[in-house]
Amino acid sequence: MAFPENPSRQSLIPSYLYSYPPNSVNTEHSSMRGGVSGRPSVTSASPRPSRAAGTGRNFLIPAPKESRVELFSPAYYAACTAGGILSCGLTHMTVTPLDLVKCNMQIDPAKYKSISSGFGVLLKEQGVKGFFRGWAPTLIGYSAQGACKFGFYEYFKKYYSDIAGPENAAKYKTLIFLAGSASAEFIADVALCPFEAVKVRVQTQPGFARGLSDGFPKFIKAEGASGFTRGLFRFGDDKFHVSIYQLETDIRVLDLCVKCAFIRRDCHTMMKFATFENIVEAIYKYAIPSPKDQCSKNLQLGVSFAGGYVAGVFCAIVSHPADNLVSFLNNAKGATVGDAVKKLGLVGLCTRGLPLRIVMIGTLTGAQWGIYDAFKVSVGLPTTGGGSSAPAKK
View 1 (cartoon, rainbow, N blue to C red):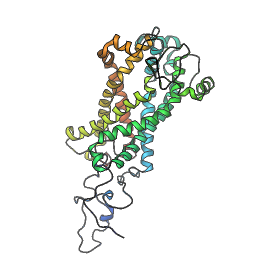
View 2 (tube, rainbow, N blue to C red):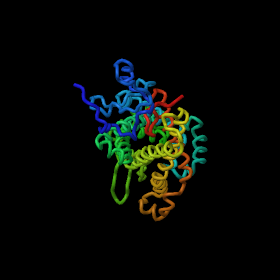
View 3 (cartoon, one colour):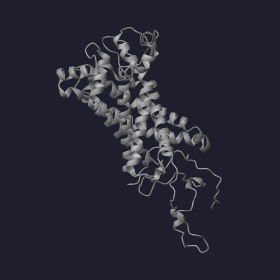
View 4 (cartoon, helix red, strand yellow):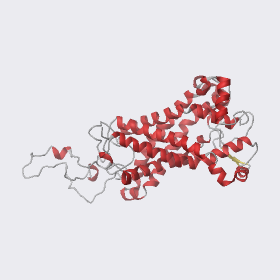
């Protein structure tokens, strides 16, 4: 039974996520050109509602002609997952030397006094190969994290939008971004934790293991499976301890690499995704005269990198106080968060070392969004944000 078209019905897909590209032609209607007498042919200039506006069962927006991947289909989420693997795995592996020095500075600040001297100590004691110790658990762990982070973000963004409905989803889109990224990051942290635990142990305890292949079984034998998550959240004695393992020297650590803590990482990721989405939308709305679907592939990817870089700056600002707390608590055994605030002051806690962190996190985040969207474009999907479902032009 055919149902009449109702122009007042709204799409279940919020327009701010993906909008139907202009000047496109409905293949069903175009096949009727000249086929039925008395009916006008449908041209590319004729506006028409998407399939989502009807009452048919298939409410997904068809993927662009250049892509065989249907938006919001299992294949679409699989593509986003693959893009997340490349995005996070490659970028984090690239900065392994910097991460290694940073972790050792937090464990042994007397020996690793600064980034420059830390590189010198590693080069002298372990040679050039020492700079990439722990690269395997870094690559695999952050690939798993990226897969869950980006793949589930796309899923939860759509899921929460459908729950909210078109009007509320458009009105409270930033809340949708925040909720989707928080949900995705929770799952991503669970995937990352075992590999991060081995990575930190390999990087900070010389002789423990050469890498992931021998470090993983050694860790399980020494700590048990629960060792991967022990101390992830621990409160007590007016101290907030967030760590992935307890050091044998019993140094109280506010997370050896605070980035593994659920709370801090969720805040970081929420800022990363919500800020990126809004910045990209603003760039296409105010800075670029042409609609997104009329922009070239290189321009769209440039917008993705720029949006990612600015989002990384906000991420660095939000997460920097926790990083300063790490350094202070590792240098002052038995100190509390209150001691850090009293010693550094609120301004110092938020600004000391911030410029370097902005450059590092901004570049890393920009590269992640650039790689992620480049992969999506390579399979014929649109870049993230900006409100168009059209693939990038060559």
